[in-house]
Length: 483
Image 1 (cartoon, rainbow, N blue to C red):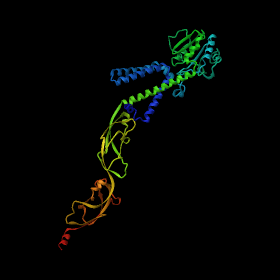
Image 2 (cartoon, helix red, strand yellow; image 1 turned 30 degrees about the vertical axis):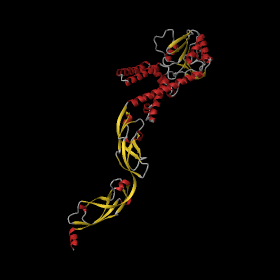
Image 3 (cartoon, helix red, strand yellow; image 1 turned 135 degrees about the horizontal axis):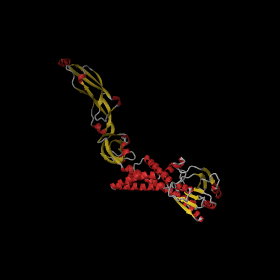
Image 4 (cartoon, helix red, strand yellow; image 1 turned 90 degrees about the horizontal axis):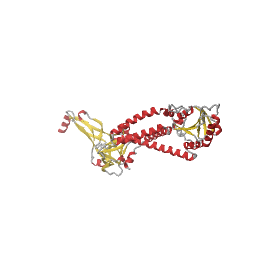
């Protein structure tokens, strides 16, 4: 369970969008190619890819190499052998069909009406070509003909194919219980092994079923025979009583509700499989190709009590060993990482704090491998104030013949703020170094203060003090002492 949680930890919203987008593309490919040979071959290629990845994980080098070669060759074979079916899908009539429309099988088709019309056409030896799209649809393959969207009836079908009628030479398309198009020209099959007894209508029906899973009913004008064409095969029907049962068999039967539910279940299962396959593929690439990197990240101490002050810390940075997908690691910057340690529960003095994974904030998709150091010692103190004297700090010596007779610091004492521990060790505050070599006459100088330790702070009004000094000649000073 822990490995599973770690596998899905650190996901970004971009990762979810990436998976959903590619899963939808995979689902659309399934919808567009379902029922065709292309989909079956693609599923075989995917199966080989899965086996190849498994062989790679198990260290089967030759097997993985062979499968990669087979997959590469199979890709070119699919493009060459099934170019007609692929071009039929690519030549879609509308953007809606290509992006989100789902072709439905013939569920609500009145089979009895079609059967009666076909029997009458065959008895009268009137040639007819009736197309019934199933799962893949035919809009991407045929775009000719006249859109009529007429109610389906025996009389309407007979009139469409009646000799001399404007639309009798083409095919009629029946979808969802209506005649959607008539006078449609179908692509002819290039199969040279087709028997000579079959005419242009049979060749056209065969050409359409080579590119989709539609059911095509052909009525021969010369022989008055009825044939059902599907999956590149022509089935001659000698007994007219079997026409209705065979049409029901191919179109889903007389129970439209169950047929619709069955299609919905099929599409739902396909969508779930596409999502799972895309997720597995994403995990295979993002988790399988990991990159390690070290970053020195500053430690940020969170102070719950404003009266507390950090006097000292054993480390200001900690080195993090991280891992993740190469693009994520390469784009990582320090401002996107942080180490935050709460000082809640600490006391005045030295405190040893442990840096855990909960203290480290990393971008989604980046995993923490190691922390060094994983402990830091922090010295804390409460803030206090203290009045201390100020002493001027001179360096060097006065020029020859001069002597400093008086020194006065204004103010003589100042108030400093800092930790109680640090203040206990402070009895005097010194000024910055004043070089005596530069002093030749009496005067006044403004000089800053030196805080030791540096965490101490002087009163804002007295960040600098005034030093007044008197310098006189050494000879005059000695004469005065002799008198």
